[in-house]
Amino acid sequence: MTSGKQPHPGPTSEAARTLHPTAGPPRPWRVRPQLSLAELDAGAPELTRLQMQLLANRGIVGAADAFAYLRASWRATPPEPLGLAKAVARVRMARTRQERVVVFGDYDVDGLTSCALMVLALRQMGIDTSAYLPSRSDDGRGLNAAAVRELANGGASLVVTTDCSTTNVAEVQLATSLGLDVVITDHHAPQGEIAAACAVVNPRQLGCPSTEKNLAGVGVALRVAEALLTGAETGSDNDTLDALLDLVAVGTIGDVVALTKENWRLVRAGLARLNRAPRHLVRAGAVPQRGRAHGRCNGGAAAIAH
Ligand SMILES: [Mn+2]
Image (tube, rainbow, N blue to C red; front, side, top):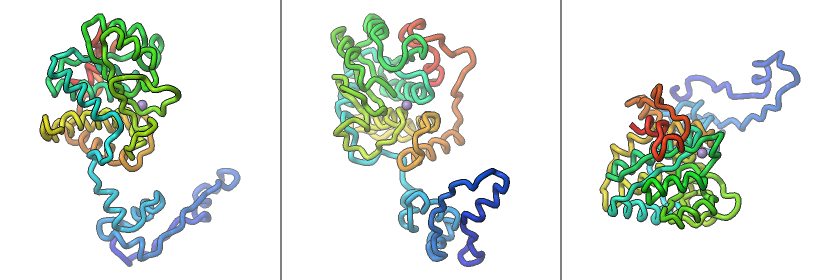
């Protein structure tokens, strides 16, 4: 829309009511204040009046803020989350020592995509990595004692969780006693004591300075992968990271987190990636019964991670 050509109709409660004349009692419309014409045209010609109004409705007012918001990169912004450096150090140690690593995910979309993302990132680093997905009906969420014993017996010496386990105090204790180190990546607001893992990366834990508080589990996993794959030791690996963004979009949308700020940037980039290079997200016949029955590596995340 070019500036000044058409009067902006603007949302009014009267107009809104006329859209639903037979919908019962008037709905409680709360109409945001309409911008002035000058404000509506401040982003022209790139941004339409409608876009300017919608952005203002979401607290992003003025052309400078609008462009800054819309053009922001999906890459991590400082300060980095608490525990990230420790997580990176422990995973790099696993590579140096050629350890066997298991990524322990979750059974929902966020848990599946975050698990697949982490498996791909660690394999990219040359680490022997497999996936473990708990069963919703038998295992529940997060690390459990039976799985911990199975993974330790199977020769793994490091478990990286995604989308779970921030407060699995007893299970992490058990793992440590069996020689199995744990790095936790999660986004659930901790209810209770935080597990004494090698590292806990969770933007919602107390003392985490990261401003990316609304990331889904897969967003947190991406930030860890980003740090692993772009550090001074590894050098920049933009292509590998870009190839993970479709998983981030699917997991973030599936987890129904607020699509603002960091999530909006990630989903936008991820949907672009999906359009450019679609991935087969589900392969018929590859869906597992449950993690434990299939040993340390099961089909669901493995199917995604190829
Ligand atoms: Mn989640």
